Amino acid sequence: MKLETEIVHGKNALSFEEKTGAVCVPIYQSATFKHIGLNQSTGFDYSRLSNPTRTVLEESLAQIMSAHDALCYSSGMAAVAQVAELFKQGDKIITSEDMYGGIIRLLRNITAKNGVEIVSIDTADLKAVEKLIDKNTKALLIETPTNPMMRVTDIAAAATLAHKHGALLIVDNTFLSPYFQRPLELGADIEIHSGTKYLAGHNDTLAGVVAVNSQDLSDKLRFIYKTVGACLSPFDSFLTLRGLKTLHIRMDRINENAGKITEFLRGQKKVTKVYYPGLKDHDGYAVSKKQASGFGGMISFEVDSEDTVKHVLETVKVISFAESLGGVESLITYPAVQTHADVPKDERDARGINTCLLRLSVGIENVKDLIDDLTNALA
Ligand SMILES: Cc1ncc(COP(=O)(O)O)c(C=O)c1O
Image 1 (tube, rainbow, N blue to C red):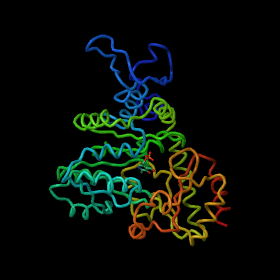
Image 2 (image 1 turned 30 degrees about the horizontal axis):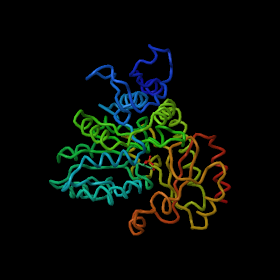
Image 3 (image 1 turned 90 degrees about the horizontal axis):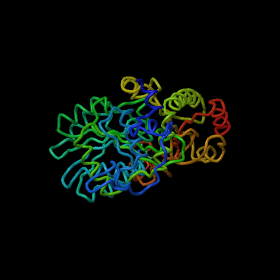
């Protein structure tokens, strides 16, 4: 079956269709499940461990992502936090320096308390990454393209490097979704998503996803999962499944809109820089073209002054000034004061996350309405 058909149909693991004819999986709003006898189970005992609605979502995602297993969490951050629990005192994780600020906050303030060393670098430069690898290095954690500076790392080359040193490659694939970029097929061991974004796709649900390529990783993460309890609720599993069915058509429209908006932004006199991996002069263009089938809907751009930033954020009407990304509605974010506020200022400045940088998550609206909105806001 082709990917688009798998996305629409999912994996109806529990054969609801056969039993009831239901085309969509119901919301199993039950915390617990009756045992059919001593030492006998229907396969479901308690919803912290597994729930039928969530299982259908997890099996559908595993199929879509070519994964051995996929686990769904209450948010993207819950997903990252539980992956971080795979590591112990003395281990070292090398991460992309430009990542979603919440992940940097988590790793440096919470994961580090377990005695795990966190080292960050521009992972687009894998030679520099290799110099940091030592015997304690247990994982490379990359985001590509990065949030918000759109740095691109070669996933296949990063996998080869990690494996050469006995480390795992973990990829946050939130920005492109498995429709455009397929880290597990490129050699990654773990693929993470904020399912809140493109997978659920409607700005109405928080969700997190971790997909793995082995039984060993699945066993370790499922143990943490049942023990910690950051599981996705039945209702949010249903919403994520419903949103997921249109992933491919949303991504295609978003990609098309983003290409046109990037061209438009490049022609604006108040816009001084545009960061988008689909631009031929972007550092990561060649790698993006090789490893992804679309450039996505995230565009960062710099304007000429903080006054322009304020004017844009307060003038847009079709686009909402709001945190988050990846939904059908276009959103504009101010990284220095929102998503990356907790990253120290000197680090933000060094990476280009200055007070004139804006990040646009392009939605599926008519592109002319989006361009008219931006034209007005940049006047
Ligand atoms: C790339 C990326 N990863 C992870 C997260 C965290 O996801 P959530 O907000 O669902 O907890 C975000 C949130 O913005 C993100 O942008």
